[in-house]
Amino acid sequence: MLVKLVNHTPDPERAVAVAARMCYSSLPPLQITDKLDDYQIVALIRELVRRGHFSPLEHASFTFIITGSRAMSHQFVRHRIASFSQRSQRYVKESGFSYITPPSIQVNAVAEQIFARCMNELQKTYNELLQLGVPAEDARYVLPNACETSFVCTMNARSLHNFFRLRQCQRAQWEIRRVANLMLREVRKVAPVLFAQAGPPCVVDGVCPEGDKSCGFINRLRVDRSAGGSVD
Ligand SMILES: Cc1cc2nc3c(=O)[nH]c(=O)nc-3n(C[C@H](O)[C@H](O)[C@H](O)COP(=O)(O)OP(=O)(O)OC[C@H]3O[C@@H](n4cnc5c(N)ncnc54)[C@H](O)[C@@H]3O)c2cc1C
Image 1 (spheres, rainbow, N blue to C red):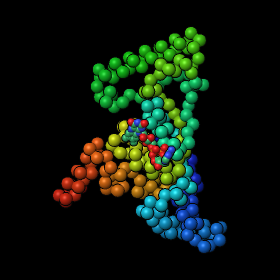
Image 2: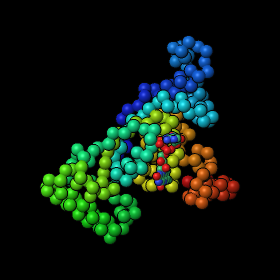
Image 3: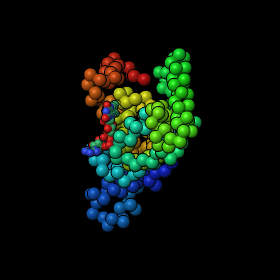
Image 4: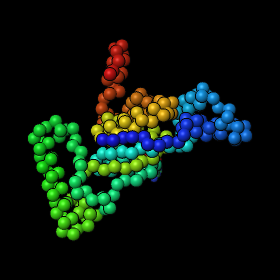
C-alpha cells in the first residue's frame, strides 16, 4: 500500500484563514493576508472547525498518490467531492498484475494458498485471452477486486474531513481505513491545525451515530472514564 501526499495548496492554513477573514473583515481585500499573524490563523481555524463553518476549508487542496486494491479504489471513488485519475485497465495491460491479500486470508495458510492459486489462474486466463486477440478492455472482465491499482486523488480540506469521518470509523473496511489513517498522518504534517479535529465521530464528537452497528468503542471509553482510566 502506498499513500503519499505529493502536492498541496501553499500555506494551506493561511489560505483557509484568509478566506474566513474575508467573510467578516471590512479591510481592503489585499490587506487581509498581510494582517493575519500565525496566532490569528490558528485561532480562526479552530473557531471555524468548532462552529462547523466549513466552507473556507474548501480553499485548501491536497493531492495524493494512492496504491491499493480495486476493491478499495471502488469505495474511494464514491467520494464525489474529489478529483481522480486512475490507471486504466483498458490502456494498460495487466499481464503480470500484483494483488492485495486481505489480512484475514494472510493469517490462514490454507486460505492464502487457495487465494494465491485463484489469482494465478485468473492471471493465466487473462493472458490467454490477450493471446487470442481479445482486447485488454474485455480481457479485464476476469480480473479480481484484489488487483492492485494506482490513482491520483485531489481533495479539499472540507471533503477530507468528511472522508476521515466516514473512513476512519471501525465500520469502514480495513483497507480504506488504513488509507484514511495514512492520509490523515500526511496532511497533519503540513496542516496540523486544520486537521487537529479530524477523525471518526467517536473521536471528534464523543458520540457514535452507528446505533446497533456501533463497534462499542465509545461505550468502552465512557465506562473506562467513569472508572478513572483511559482507553488505549
Ligand atoms: C461504512 C460504510 C459502508 C458503506 N456501505 C455502502 C453500501 O452498502 N452501498 C453503497 O452504495 N454505498 C455504501 N457506502 C458509501 C456511502 O454511502 C457514500 O457513498 C460514501 O461514503 C461517500 O460519502 P459522501 O457522499 O459523504 O462523500 P462525497 O460524495 O464526497 O460527498 C460529500 C458530501 O457532499 C454532499 N453531497 C455530495 N453529493 C451530493 C448530492 N448529489 N446531493 C446532496 N448532497 C451531496 C453530502 O453532504 C456528502 O456527505 C458506505 C460507506 C461507509 C463509510
